[in-house]
Amino acid sequence: MNFETSEPLRPQTGPVPHASSQVSIPFWQGCRSEELRYQRCAACGLANFPPTENCRQCLSAELHWTPGGGAGEIYSWTVVHRPVTAEFEPPYAPAIITLDEGYQMLTNVVGVAPDDLAIGMRVRVQFHNVGTDVTLPYFTGSGYAAVSPARTSSGLPVTAYLVLGVLAANDEQLTAGEIKTRAELSVGHFYWSPSVSHVRRELNRLLARGMVGEIGAQSGKRAITLYETTDAGLDALRRWVQHFPGQDQVVIKHPVILKTWLARGEDPEHVIDTLERHLETTRARLDEALWSRQRSRELGIVDDPEQRFSFAVLDYAIRGLYAEISNIEQLRDEIATGTSRDPAKRARRSKGQIRRRVHLAP
Image (cartoon, rainbow, N blue to C red; front, side, top):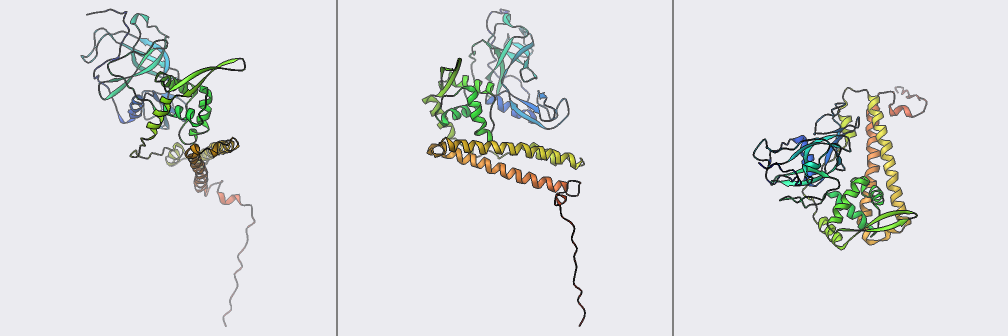
């Protein structure tokens, strides 16, 4: 058997055994979209991986799937020259990667010669199709170019099109940080807004495909990089938008409502406090959406016919936030009925009397 270790390690090219369960489905869906997803506990903040139904630290069931940046460092590794099963083609390097988000993943390193592997080495994720039914996250050194396996995933994740859309919205040249801010003030009201590191990762994908261009510029004494859409990027965005997911099931995930539904036997005061905090957050979000609409009016953007759909969706989001506030206030008052925070006690009025007339018989 050849024990040569100077060639870069490569991903597997054939079907390999892999485990899957209901709780891990979002992880595998993320891999197919080239997103490395993990669970973040809303109660204590712990990053959980492998996927689980309850937080490993506080046992809360309030776990939310979150896309990570896909960067980390090697915690431990080994090189296998004699495979455990025939499905694996040696050599390959199983490794434990400590992700920047605070969790560890057992995976494989590719694109690096085995002799170059080292504990603490910075790595980044690469996704590769293995067989016909699974996309696996491999990791390679941060300074290494992507390797070319027999089959790779060529699709872009939704976040890449989000970045393209933000750039195309007003035909602007924006920095990665400005893209994040624009996303917060637009799609963030009804979808989500990626972090700056996530934006940069998608920009790198788009640059590699010729869908965006980059321009060096100066902001005062500071050198900055601006990004703009290309014709190829605009064409890809148009084609993507034309494929609406009309058959997708509508799924509404509301962790606060779920927690309230599960709070049987809990102190009503605690549930009311949770709803009050949610109201504060929702009102702040509404204020941001109203500011965004007002600022767009001041800049004259709302008069642009091409922005018609965007502002219709913004108004949809604003109506939704108003409705959310009204619904949560009513839910809070229903739960508070009969407690020390009964809404009827908010009225500061003296109790009146009923003086019924006495009707004498004729």
